[in-house]
Image 1 (cartoon, helix red, strand yellow):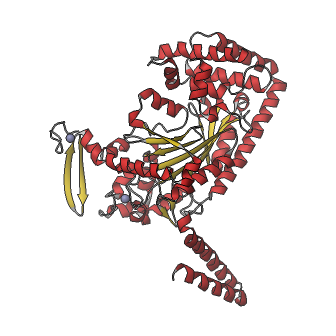
Image 2 (cartoon, protein in one colour):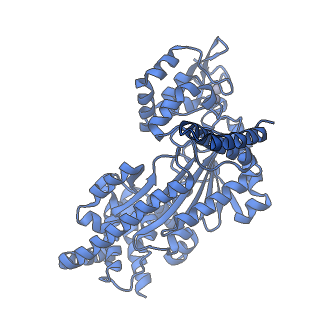
Image 3 (cartoon, protein in one colour):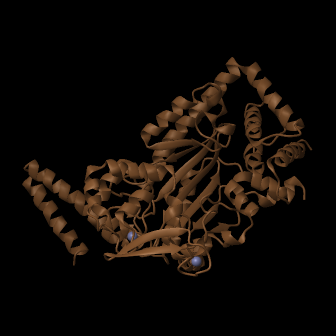
Length: 354
Length: 170
Ligand SMILES: [Zn+2]
Ligand SMILES: [Zn+2]
């Protein structure tokens, strides 16, 4: 199978499609934690409890209201091989924690914009993941999903404490909203730490998608709400929205600044990275991410033409170990992965130039 | 020592459970422990930042320290003790919130900056909760009007409050 066919089958919609502000915002995600009344949380559940719960959730997903948002395919993690589990994590459809415990499952919509984890830390974690900057749309979808499941499941709720969750850091709305952003110019101009630490003063957190702090690989960051109680869902979204808007503005300004002040150096770095990706025979994932980030910046700044902008998010996921092994059809050690990763990137670049 | 449950595999999970003052020791193999859902206790009790953060917060809280010393604090629905919650940083079931309630408010204020949910309400309970929230607001307004000596306004509010109270508590 060609890489193009493989990706178009294996990639989620958020990886293939563009969205608003997608020169900076890669994806928008809303995740809602819910639990059923009078049932132990998965940490204390027996295998049998977990199976019963999954059964209840599947039934709830088949009611008219819920199936209008589906249909959902049910994947029991215990029945998948290690590579397929890893691929789900790399596509951000399930958490790493889900694949480590027994009895975990995920209900997936075909376009993978909706995934519902069952028996993770909470009974249900309903996720809506959209390409680009679509917080509001992601929230609307998650809210509909919540309503549809609530019709047939008795969610644990307390008037004072809100939706009850296994961990006190999620109680209240049970909602975690996050935006993945690509900030190469803020990193280049060394403003990123200042801006990101300011963000933590308004109840939000920032972390690298791959690696922490200023070592965040590929200049990819995730901004999300820290607090789930004492603010309504609308306030949480509004708060994140106003901060992300400012981050977008700062990144745009920084890009204009480096075009004027450092065009030669930026052009050199972008083109070197393009050259390495186009010709390297071995590349580790850290270097690949950094070079892909450079090339993406080059595309956004019109330095590189004829390469599709989705290359960064597509390859940041497709060059991860699980995806690489899936594409090549067998398990590989790190050394072989470096060669296959380089080959995949070369092939992807060739696809565009044809 | 062999697992007490199956008698086949070596017992690697050892723990003590106190149910209504009755202490029972268990020695199980890993797969039987998982069947009982207790292996997770061990697995999650390991070094994990958020747990340590939470138990750190709880240990430094004098209100919580006092509660902890009363040995019986335990959730009647899932059996999790307050001490176990402290170690794990996780609740055992939704009822734990009620069982540990007095000790939780200050913890929630610290990690959440508030101990009051103001967001979405499940549809089936929507009516009542919305009315109670409105009642809280009206009672505050009433106090304010009395303070300002606006008695006519206050009388209005009092009537409205009585009306809503009848809806919530028939
Ligand atoms: Zn056994
Ligand atoms: Zn409990």
